Amino acid sequence: MRVKTPLPSNKVAQSSLSKGLALLTAVAEKGSEGINLSEASTKAGINISTAYRLLNALVEENFISLDPYSKFYHLGLMPYEIVERAGSDVAFLELRRKLHPTLLAIQEEVDGIVCLSVPSRGESLCIDLVSGSSHITINTLKIGARRPLGVGAASLALLASLSDEEREKVIISEAERYLRYGCMTAEIARDAVSLLDSQGYVFNDAYVIPDIGAIALPLFSENSLIGAISVTTTISRLSKERRKQIAAMICAAVKREGMQVKRRR
Image 1 (tube, rainbow, N blue to C red):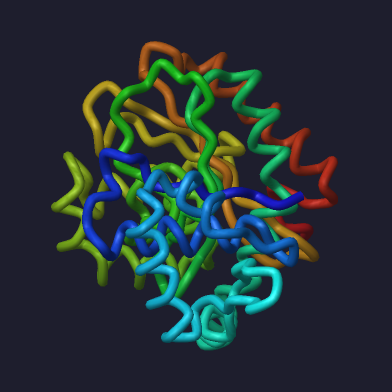
Image 2: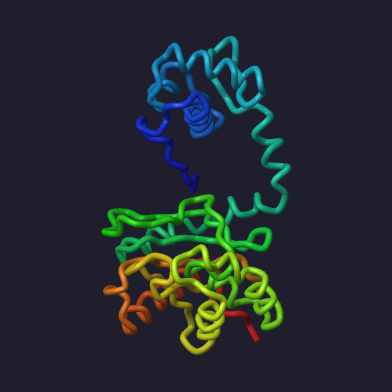
């Protein structure tokens, strides 16, 4: 299943850079089929003369290519070179494709914001997010956002899954950064991650955004930590009993994908 990254809205896509990126995304979404000038300009919400100019610039820089016969645009070599330079992070795209239907199913049941995060270069990286028609209007986590390990529910779940020694090393090194996020502190991080074994999940008790909480479970494949799934909603909707129910939903959903929420002993 191909997971689509939303195109920038017309209100956002004002600069030449954002318009160019909107066109690049439109070309990428069409895959091997390609896209012509008219359709690309329509999808990106840009007038055709501007789209023509920006597409030519992208061709010049090898981000896209133009078939001179069909007049269709396709991805060029440069995006693939960028992906190659990203190294191990590319594997996250496959995980995102695999679990996106799972996130959709969870979101439909819980009516919150469901996020998939992975450990990346010593931080937590959000690689997918499903909000549906969620009632929550405040959410600072977006796809591609990075957080220190321990900030936010998914990040807490990743931190909690490290060895005791690794966990404490991270908490000490990130103590100052924690202070930038709501009421988060190193001590709160220690307390929150310590409850994973007894609760089966970690709980962000409105540490970052007032009145907004979240629970999360880590994901393991072949006993290796690969990510965490979190569900964010208002604190009033996260009673202890409800947290248990959401945790059970996440656990059942990831097991259907052949993954676990605990390391095998």
